[in-house]
Image (tube, rainbow, N blue to C red; front, side, top):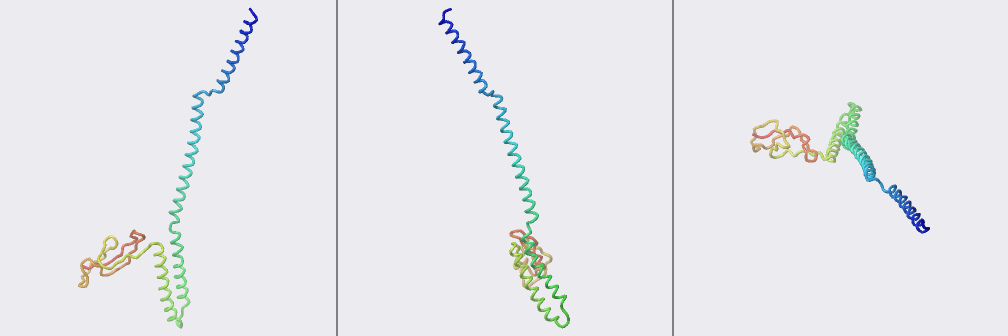
Length: 184
């Protein structure tokens, strides 16, 4: 063989070796599509598990907040009503300290104290959206409960004659209907 042919053959073999090496590198660089899909699926699964855990934690936190809101919903009202309780306790203490000599004075102060306590209680109820039901005029079955009917020349049929027990609403809901007597 000639020297040129040997060189060509050698060069061809070298080129083939280089191509094989490059091909092996490409194979190493090329990711198997199945492996790539599995890796991507694993990544999505991990993200899903984390998102689901976050969702469950948020759900538990909201449930706990809801339970606390229900459990302590009346806390503000209870604090307000404690002032009224204090007023009653003060009144009871004043009664216990009364004797025959100052009975008239204590009675007068008690009357004044009861009126003030009554007004204080009405303010607490009003602050908490509890209002007295108007019980004058015509009977309304949505807010009144008729206890009895009476004959009355002064009132029209179904007019409220007398209020036996006041009724109250909280916002737009009836807490307790007013118990009334109506005209026949």
